[in-house]
Every structure is written in structure tokens, then in C-alpha cells.
Length: 139
Image (cartoon, rainbow, N blue to C red; front, side, top):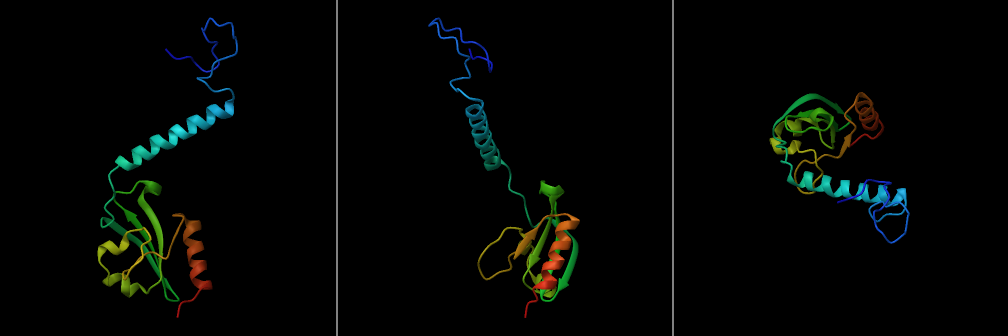
């Protein structure tokens, strides 16, 4: 049977310090709780189904100076309601020809389209991406 935090131990040794499940300070308790939460979250994410990034809707596209900015809503993604703002280092015409798998939001090396950058999926993020494109023209 465990003790609640701050409860006195029922040990009969005569030592009367409060028992914190083997920890002495609040910092030690917080660190243990944080570590346990990290482990539990890692397990949860490992077992979570992987989203199918071919299931998406293009909400907006802007081409500026050789860059293409795309706002995409992924059907099976939950962060920010599934919306991502992705910058590609290509013209929009290249994205139109690309297979649906090109819209995977993760960075990847190789001879295929991959995001150059992602931005916070808010108006602030969209505006920052536009500003970046205007200040960094591609050939």
C-alpha cells in the first residue's frame, strides 16, 4: 500500500520525516512525474495510427518568386485541426504534377518533392512565410 504525498510513514523505526515515495524534495518528485509522463506519451505515440497524408484538401496556394506556399488540411491529422502551412522550393506547376505522396509534411532527402520549411498554421505563420518568400527570391 502506497502513501500519499506528504503522509507520514507508518514505519516503526522512529524516523518521522515525511515519505514522498523515496524522494526527498519537490524537485525530485516533479522530475520523476515528468519522466513518467514522457515515457507514457512515447508509448502512446508509438501505438497511435499513422496518418495517411494522401488524404488531404488544399486550402490555399501562393507562388512567389519561385517558391510555392501551400495550406493543407489533412483528414487524419489532429494537431492544429490537421492544418499545416508548407513551403516548397519549386513552382506551383511542379506540385500540380506531383503524386499525392508529395504532400507528406515531413522533410525527406531524395529526388522527389519535399517541404523546404513548415510554418505555424496560423495567420501569423502564413504571413511569415509570405515575407520569407518575398525576401528570398529563387532563380
